[in-house]
Image 1 (cartoon, rainbow, N blue to C red):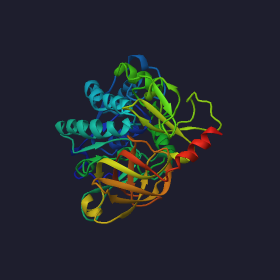
Image 2: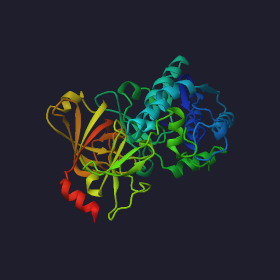
Image 3: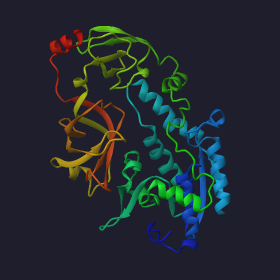
Image 4: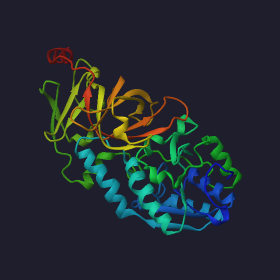
Length: 393
């Protein structure tokens, strides 16, 4: 692949490990590198018990995908290995997912998977195999920075950009990672797959969380944490009981449907009180969030984050993968820690979600890092009596 990978050394003498999920993106990544003459090794991770999901569409790393990855490797003439990561994946991703839901959060397991499995454990494996680089099929760009090191940037095609899920990538990891598809469109990727004669050229993209084959998160959590679906009260903003629920794991902040409450005005889940097993509901206005407190912050911008927070720094943030970055202030909280002040408040922000930082709102903006949302502050507190009156109408 001409120059765009920025890999030092002759291709024939440079080993590159490609994380092959069995989908079209990682398959084309491997094919491009092999065509360019690199010593490519394909690795597929078996992350969960795939027996029941072998024929299910929209899943990644299932049995069908392992078969597809192996077929692609044979087609392009590279060695291919399947590594059993089930135990590690359960500990680092699935168990944390369940614990987060039980705590009333809305987790983003794809971030945990990239952080703990693909860009940590798999990088270690790549080094053990003598590889200089680990390449993936993510739609995100990596470029050398003028002052040294590498930066992470949004993909050329905004609709495919996956940078939100990669904010936790460290600077040291970026030096060893390459993303050949970041400057390409999905249509171009599929065209390349056809040119290479890959059977996965028209394969459906993975959509759901891979270890939730039916899309019913609560069923997975109940199996992993028996008793997690303990019943409790649904209460209004004043704490008055409006009804009962069969477990907070069935609810997320911002949810409107399925509350089972008759009210004269639409009600939304505003907050989940896991300790008291309470689902707090209110009008849409109560969902507005203006300040976000973060934990486990990863900084990829220039210098150290302490230097960036000497005052307030203007940045752009995404609190959902499907929304464009919006303007915000990055600052130090009154009691320490990192906080984000949203210039335009956001609806339905939940603890556990990711908050990614960018240096611009449009184009291939540089990723400045991000963190996980620990708690939120409402944009404006509604008077209790006004909220009660509104809900009673």
